[in-house]
Amino acid sequence: MKIDLTWFMRVAGIIGALFIGGLTVASSQVVSSNDASPTLYAYCQQFQILYIRIREQTITPDSARLQFSHIMHGLQDRFHSQESYRQDSLQQDSLRRTGLYFSFPIRGYTTSAIGGTHGEGYRGRGFDLFDYNVRGSHPAQDIFIADRNQNIIDDATGKPADILSMSNGLVLAIETDWKPGSEYRGGNWIWVYDPILNGLFYYAHNNEVTVRPGQWVASGQKLAEMGRTGFNAYKTRSPTHLHLMYLQIQPNGLPAPLNTYQWLLAAKLTKK
Ligand SMILES: [Zn+2]
Image (cartoon, rainbow, N blue to C red; front, side, top):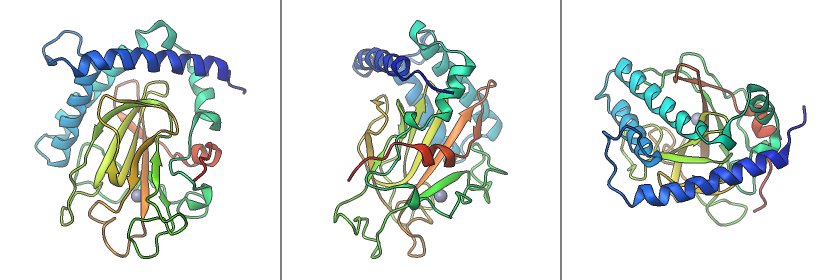
C-alpha cells in the first residue's frame, strides 16, 4: 500500500505548528496538576516523575500501570482532539509499514550497524516496563558505531555520533545525570511520544542529551550524542552503541514492545 505522503507531511506540519504554539504557553506557566485538562507539558512532567519512581521502585508495578495508562490516554486525547489528527487504522498501518516515515537513528550509519545479522538481538518476551527487577528480555535493537578505543568518538569521523529521532514526536522525559558507578541500566535516556503511531521511542546510553521535555522533534532531528552511560553499557566488554526500544500503546493504555527491525531496514539514512 502506498502512503499519501502529502497528507502525512501536511498533518505533521500542522501538528508541529500547533504544539510549538501550545508548548510556548505551557512552559511559561506554572502548571497545575489539578487542572481538568492538563497541558502537554504537564503530561511530560507526570511521565518523567512516574518513570523515575519505577526505576527507584518507590511505586508498585500495579500503581505504575494505572498511572501510565492514565498519562497515555490523556496524551492520546490531547492529540486526537485536533481534527487534522484523526485517522483510521488503515492509515496508521500504512504509516508503520513505510520506511519513508522513519529516519535511521544514527547520523552517517546504515543498517549494517544493527547488532546481529538479522536483528535477532530483539527479545521481547518477559518484558515488564513497570517492574525494574524483571530482567532477561531485550525488547530493543542495539546499533553500534566504530569506536575501538571506547572514547565515544566515532573512529570514522573523529566526532561524537549524533542520535536522531526516528520519527516526529514529543520529547516526554530525559535523564541527563547518569554517573559512572550508578546501577541504572539505561544511563542517559530519552523518551519520545509519537502521536501518529501512538507509541513511545526510548533511546538509551547517550552521552549528551540535546533536547528537553515538552519539545517537539522532527524525524531525523538530533536528540543526543551517543555515549556509554548505563550500568552495563559503561563496561569495557560493551561496544559503544544505541539501545533503541519502541513501545506500542495498546487500547488499554499499556505498552507492548515491538521490534523496530523492519522500520530500521527501510528508514531514511542521514549522511555524516
Ligand atoms: Zn540494548
